Length: 305
Image (cartoon, rainbow, N blue to C red; front, side):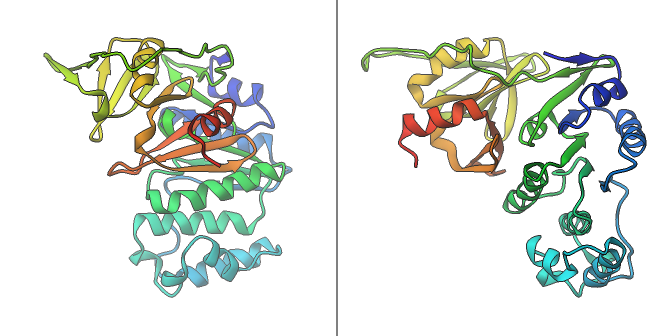
């Protein structure tokens, strides 16, 4: 898997590709400058955390202003409808919620029909209900031949994006492994009695979870965690070991870095030919990446059509 010494090396090495990077703020700032230089001759759209709009504008007037600047085929009214902003179209920007401001910024970017999109922490303020709108639009950019680059999101969010995910560790940038073609399927026989507890740590305490309590297992920056009732607990077992034990309890290895409790899956979504995710029925409606190589296997195994 690829690794790079600086974010500039990463973006140069992955030039003209969609990449999503878990990184610190200083790396994000350098990424913005690099993209401005590298893609200066292409239609670019940027959304960084300091983009808050003009307080005294309404959503409608703000987007009409940028529609005139863009001079494209998309109207302010169309993008207001697409991003679910009709109810606040006449609301002043200063009175918007954080999510509404974020959606307004995505609407602004869409007016330019960009070839290159850069977003800093694009999903941080987006609720599970509205996330599919954002991911669908980003997927459309990629499907039409564009590039999407994001920085600052946790690796789990980066893996949901169309393209390759990277993470920063000790000043270097490593590509997250997503190719699970070499994974061997786990076979077991019968309904024999089998007792298994997921052993995790919480401070000095050792916790023993019933597998049915676990929503998913994830591997982040070479450490493994189980998610139980919205909390992540470190575990010592490898993902391969956990997969072998948990498959009999209805878990599925949906990605090289994730094992999901299929009973907790509420929705399967596809945003591009190669971009899938699972939405869980937990309180946070967590999104989990589904590797394209595992999507068909999951449909076949569980009879989903």
